[in-house]
Amino acid sequence: MDFDLTAQQQARYDDVLAAVRARLGTVREQAGSYFSRDDWKTAADIGLVGLCLPTDSGGGGLGALDTALCLEAFGHGCPDTGFVFSISAHLLACAVPVRDFGDSPAAERLLAGLASGELVAANAMTEDAAGSDVGQLAVTADRVGDDYVLNGDKSFASNGPAADVFITYAVTNPSAGFLGITAFAVPAGTAGVEVGPPLGKLGLASCPASRVAFRECRVPVAYRLGSEGQGSVIFQHSMAWERGCLFAAYLGLMERQLQQCTEHARRRRQFGRAIGDFQAISHRIIGMRQRLESSRLLLYRACWLLDGGRDHTTAVALAKIAVSEAAVANSIDAVQIFGGAGYLTATGVEQQLRDSIPATIFSGTNEIQREIIAREARL
Image (cartoon, rainbow, N blue to C red; front, side, top):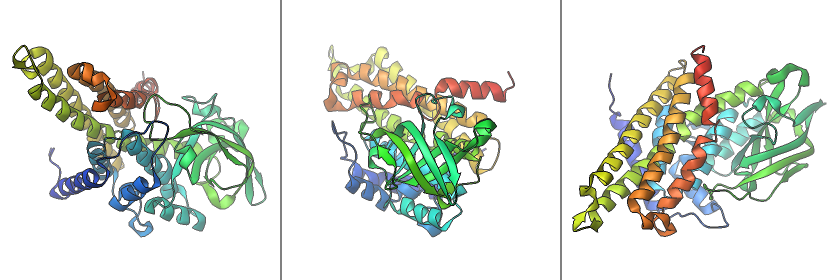
């Protein structure tokens, strides 16, 4: 069993980290605004928006583990986790379904735009009455000739206000339960698409989120992903990639955070000593490292299983829980280590906490992940 990265993987990680630090290292959360298209273009130039998309569509052609390593470097080098999240959601929750289930010329054109960064994608699944219970969708899609007519409301779409295309899910056969859900790629300019204003959020401020409504929205069959009724399978497929790869960005955040805390503990002096000399501080930092390293191993293993086409359901759920809860715990510790300075916005430490809290909720709450693990264990 070899735990080392290959020389190629390490070189790719180092290259991405260096590029992100040089070109996106000064990106900061801005109150009342979200990411700029210039920053998005920079991320696309580095290759981040198309990491796991096919090379013939302009992507990087990477597997899950290599994608995760690049997103980890992105999260390490860029202090704006909201922006990192926007890119990751675009790639994993949106572009991956188009990559694997879009089989029309229209879908191929979308994929090329997603890989180049010309298009920004938003995932529109969540509804007011369908959060964790995704089988209770109310948005409908009725087949009318060569179109589907979509009607209904989505309550939370990350990247919604900035999106050029929405990956969404609607009921095409109400009597079939989860087998009656179908996936669509809906260009934002389609008549009947109504995008709400950005929602106020605790963290991840640079990733705008909004409601999205479909009002007699006619979507050509060419923009359907997969076959009719395959939506639940497509959504779970995209979530496996998101839970397996997106949370690597939080590994990068925790790595950067750990370095900040270590440097602060060496530099900050109280009672004539560096605060790192006190076990109350040093042991807290060791706990942060333990959570980081253990959750990193779980995530790498989940991606390795995903790449190998092996059963990854439990591994991905375990990794999602471990990384998200480690990010929250480590961020609380970081605030405590920095003390009063950690409570101020200037250090960026309090932002790390705000950006970590939603990690236990999105991509399937941690409570749902535990239910998945219990089900797989036949409990």
